[in-house]
Length: 188
Image (cartoon, rainbow, N blue to C red; front, top):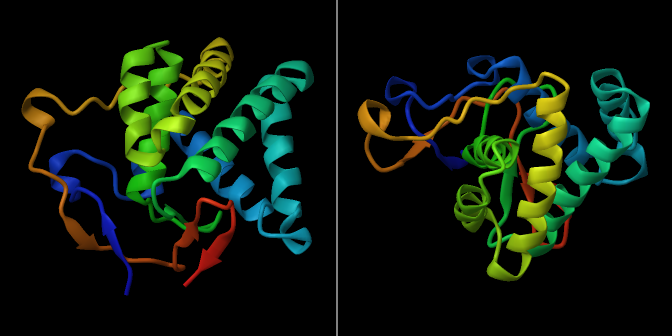
């Protein structure tokens, strides 16, 4: 059974897709679909669904720009990942810590908070890839904001700080995928 580093729900961090706002779910679903589409020709339908979501949410012109920035961010994470990135399949209701971190990174980008986005990117990406990931998170976040997809900051301060994340077993409808530095997706 895989281990995930995620906070229990009682400390305020989401543990399921349903714990997220609609804008956050949009980011997670887009990430999952794009990662699935990178799995090969038999999975390319996920890329088409991702494009349809972007075109419907942003319009054709902004959809192309948003998807380009998003894909560049995802590929930047894939190229410079410090470790395998945990990603559930598109239809799974679970939420990995890495998926939540991508939402937080995008939220920092939406706020144009370069410093916070850089700090958050350190969790996922080696130093050589951080600038590219942050730059694309800011572009993508800006477009989300312009089209009414407002992401909460989810900064862990004050009363919601909770303990240091500890490993907990997650209930998976489907096993998570490992998204490694070469961009390959591996389910286990």
